[in-house]
Length: 315
Ligand code: DP6
Image (cartoon, rainbow, N blue to C red; front, side, top):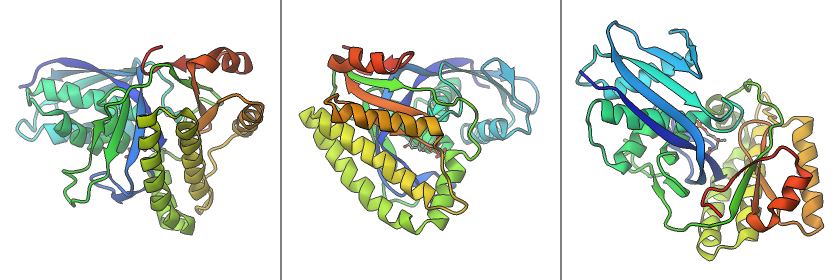
């Protein structure tokens, strides 16, 4: 049982971050979050039913050992879809056109694409909301990668998580640019999953995070509705730095920044003081994501040669 299926899902950059879970089994967040999807950057995932007992998991052309963390996580996720056909194994092939585990949320696009592919493979015909709930169980941020443009993940309050899913926001923003600075593409030592757990368990500072996130989320909604770039950029930057403050206050401490990350921050602050409308955000890694508008693109590219620029809504 089951057919072959293939889907693409975009990576997404959170402007208000998901950091901390109230349920680690179901990936239920402590706070709501808001992201923008990266259009053509993401994951293409193919699933094919195969004979045998174990899934065969391939990532960017390399077969993953069945006992690797990644392969186990993928198989456990497919189990959620395998309820009626528990014996059916799959070959899962994922190609990312973004660096894996470099803080560019490749698990988000990967699990979102896999969710859509499994939905087709078993002809489940799930709604967008149901797909988002399923993707969330693979990786929290994956629930946002089901949609293009601005996306809000509503945290929900139910224990079963059925009200914790993402929804696309109506607004679009032609000319909005996301620039990717590659400080370090090596696999990070503490992934988001372990990092947010450590923060929640050990950082007293984390108590202030849900309030910060709630305030930022509503300011971002306002910024998007009014197309106020200075508000969008400043809220996103402060939200990211607040999240990093809770990471640094964890024990053992979590500092994802490299010297080059800090140098880039200081360069951005200097350029901004000189009048360039440029902001940044960062996830659980050393790479910065720049936020600016099309009108500043030339000036930003001149300062950051080799910058990869994505325009989520076109020009
Ligand atoms: C810093 O979604 O990777 O990128 O639910 O454990 O799979 P799991 O975590 P994950 O965490 C993403 C954290 C973040 C912020 C964000 O994308 O909102």
